[in-house]
Image 1 (cartoon, one colour):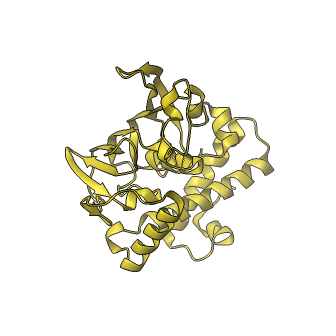
Image 2: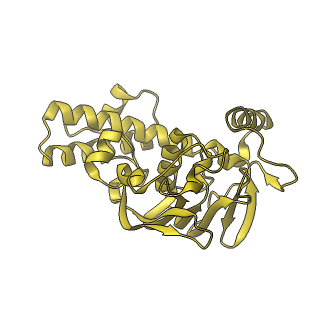
Length: 260
C-alpha cells in the first residue's frame, strides 16, 4: 500500500482502467482517513477494500438511464410495488421512465397528491410530474445534480427499509452542501396513526442515524448529513409533524455517496 489501479483487479475483476483508477483512489482515501482515526492497519485495509468495491459497483448502477428501461422491467417494478403497497389510485398522468440525467442545479420536490392514498408527484424546477418509477426507490437524477430537495408527506407510506433507501438516494443526488427538507407525521400526534395506509412512523430521533457519526457508521449507511434544524410543528388542524432541514455533507472523495 498505497494501492494502484493494478491492485483493483485482485479485489474486483473485470473493471475498466478508469474504474480501476477510481477504485484505488477511493481505497487509498478511506485507508488514510481510517488510520488517522486510530484504526488498525488490517481493519482499515479491509474497510477500504469493501468501500472501494461498493463505490465502483454504485457507479456502474448509475450508468443505467431510466429511459432505457424495458417495458418488461417497468411492468415488473409496478407488480412488485402493487404487491407491497396495494393500489394507489387511477386517472393520474403517470410517467414510468422520465429521466433528468444530464441536467444539473435542479430544485426538486417530492410529495403526495392525496392525503389518504399514495399518489406521488415529482416537481422539478416548477414542472410537476406524476411518476411511478420513483416508488421503486430511485431518483432519476445525476449524482450531485440537485441543489434543493424537498420531501413532504411521502416517507410514511413506505415500509421502514424504504426510508433508509430514499435517504441514501437523496444523499446521492444532492450536491455537497445541498439542502434536504423533510416533513413527516410525528408520533406525538394522533395523525401518525390515523391513516391505515401509513407504514412507517417517525419522531425527532428517526433521523439521527444519518447525522450522528457514530450512529451512522453503526447503522452502516452511506448517507451523511449535517443538521440545520429539527422541530415539532402542529398545523391548524391539530396535526403534528416532524420538520427537518439537513445539509448534504460531502467531501472531494465522496461524490458517489460513499462512506469515508
